[in-house]
View 1 (cartoon, rainbow, N blue to C red):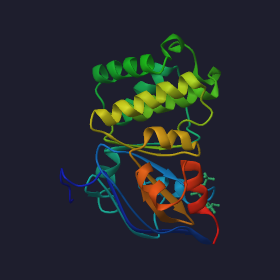
View 2: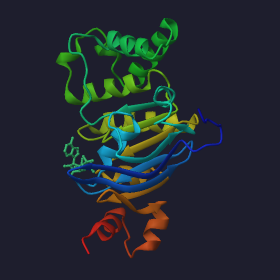
View 3: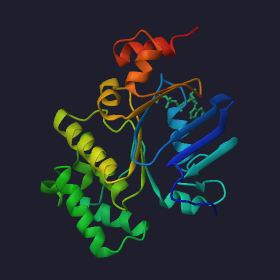
Length: 246
Ligand SMILES: Nc1ncnc2c1ncn2[C@@H]1O[C@H](COP(=O)(O)OP(=O)(O)OP(=O)(O)O)[C@@H](O)[C@H]1O
């Protein structure tokens, strides 16, 4: 196993995946530790497929993925322990209450009972779910389910947090809670990679933005750098220019 403390949080090299036609087509991407990185792209650009490969749910056809210096292909267990992936349609167990769900997820990661309880309490508080702690999750609204799934992703304190569209469908208060939680994860030295179609989220939260189109990274940088590359004043203009068909 190759691991070192200076390796980037994520390094993707020449990644390929095809479903009949290419979904991810020679993607190279590097995200440093402590960064909040937003991956943008039009529908079908290959964002979810990329994140699913990074989290070990889908096997690449070719290429290399290193998580904190650990090769996902060579040591999948070690690499996956260091990350959490929150899909855009997370699955909860409807017959569990929030605490039971979080304790269950913590158990899967081998988090001790006391630590799990402390973390669960803090996360439910942060996400304003404590008053629903004794209700079955099957009665939760979509946004409440999304927040609980995020708490589940954070319960083992992963160094790399990967989120697919984490803010879609959340009301303003919930979106603020989630944004604050992500910023606090980064402030504590963690790394966050997220996809979003809400460009304002990328604009406000991300230190760097990557734009993917047809399975390849076509532009990357800070918002300022992306603006300089185009004549776009807003991220929306930058995005539309860069992703426009030739
Ligand atoms: N399981 C699958 N089976 C067949 N094709 C798939 C599968 N998953 C993804 N694809 C195809 O791969 C391409 C990339 O899809 P992907 O979901 O990664 O895009 P995306 O950038 O996340 O899009 P969106 O913004 O719409 O969520 C699309 O053409 C999609 O139809």
